[in-house]
Length: 263
Image (cartoon, rainbow, N blue to C red; front, side):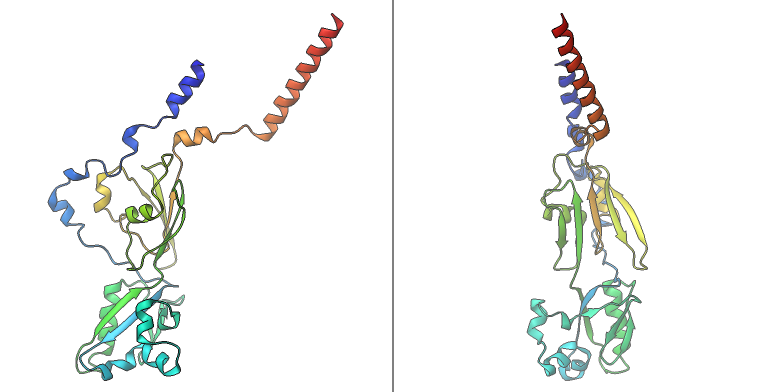
C-alpha cells in the first residue's frame, strides 16, 4: 500500500508545468511591440499560390491573371478563385522554386516571403509592360501543419489565411492532453532549400510569444511528447521477462503441489 501511494504521488505532475505562458502579462510593452508583426511564411517547393494582378486599367492587367485564360477555356472563373475550389487557378511551385507566370514565363519565387513575391512580380511587369505599377496579391492556398503526440485531435491543421502560430495550431487540435509535456515541444521544419531543422518550444515560457518559433511555417510537424507520469503508466514488462516469470511461477506452483501430496 505504501509503494502504491508513493507511485501515485510521483505520477502527479507539478501544477507549475501545466499553465501556458506563465507571467506573460508582466512582459514590458516595448518587448511586445517588437513581436507585433507576424512574419510571412517562405515560399517552398510544392506550395500552391493564388496570385492576382490588379490595376486601374482592367484590360491591361488581364493578361497577367490566370483567370483570363481559364475562363476562355471554360475551366474556371474569377468567382471560383474566392471560393478556392479550382486548383487550376493556382500556381504550383516546382522543385526549383519556379512558377510559370503568364507573359513573364518562368519566375523564381522559392525562398521569398509573401511580400517579396508581390514586389518582385510587380517589378517584372512595370514599367516593361504597363505604364502604371500594378497591385499584386499573393495568397497561400495549401498552408497547413501537422500535430501529433499528446494532443486531443492529432492530424492536419489548415489555415485559410496563410498564417498560423503554435498556440492556434494546438487550439485547433483540441489542446494538449493533461499528459502532454509542455516545456519541450518539438517542431520539425522543412526549410526553403529542402533541408530540415528541429526546433523546441516551451509553452510555459512567457517569452515564447516574442520568439521566432511562435509563428509556424507551412508543413511544420509539431510533436508533443508524453510527460514523466504518462511514461510511467505506459511501462510494460518485456515479453521475454513475462514468459520467464510465468514459467517460474508455474514451476513453483507445481513444486508446492507435489510437496503437499507427499506430506
